[in-house]
Amino acid sequence: MKTFFTLLVLLSFGAISVQAQRVLTAEGRILFSGEVKNAEGKPLADVHIVNQFNREVTITDATGFFSTYISKHHTLHFTSVGYETHIFTVNRSFGGDMLYQEIVLQPKTYTLREVTVEDENEVIETVVRKPPPEPMPDLGTLRGRTPVPVQPNLIQNPISYFYELWGDKPKQRRKVQELLREQRLDSIAYARLSGDKVWELTGLYGDRLIAFKEYCNLPPEFYLYASDYEFLITIRQLYARFQQRPLE
Image 1 (cartoon, rainbow, N blue to C red):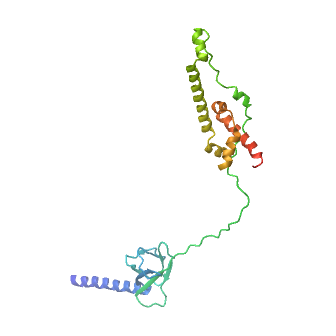
Image 2: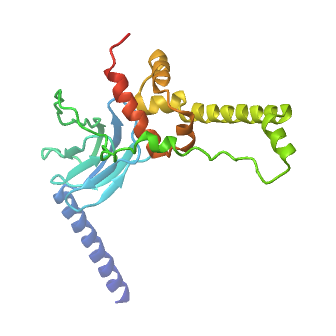
Image 3: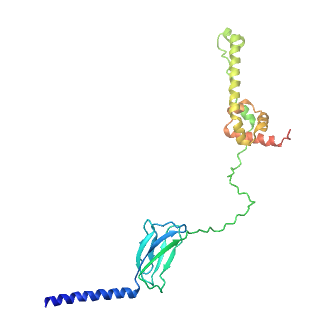
């Protein structure tokens, strides 16, 4: 009796297996495999194969090979970066249970939007203009800023006083001091009216720059005592008058 029940169970499992196989065959289950290549015939790895029916994903190996189970009504999308998506559907007239297919992916092309470039005559002002500066004070006030000469002390020995006025060594000393003062003024004038500074303020260069520096002819005290603002305004005013002169 026990042996009978055992045989009955085995027969039941066998019948179920056969019935399941018939169902799968009826649904058209197919072992689908193949290779994915590019247009040059080189295998493509890591291509994603998405079954649109059940969302199952299969990925090709390093040789571009893949294998998966599908049915006749399933649609597969082959996607890879830089390539167009390839859509594959099994022909419903296919009657086998195994299918091998070579899939070729085409490179994706990108189209840029057309851009029309037109000539624009209008000049865009990119320089931020500063407000006009205040008028410069009279140069006469600048010339009045000369140092007060030191007078010899009258309350001293008369012989020393006259020696300081007419002695040879004091005269030489005063002459040397005057020369040093003139050299200092010339150095200051050269530094403040340098070629680079004139070019920055006026845009002049070459012979025109040299002619403009000679045209300025400002007193040495001006270079010594004028502020940067006063110096800038004076050079601009002189440049405006210099531009109005007839060319030689």
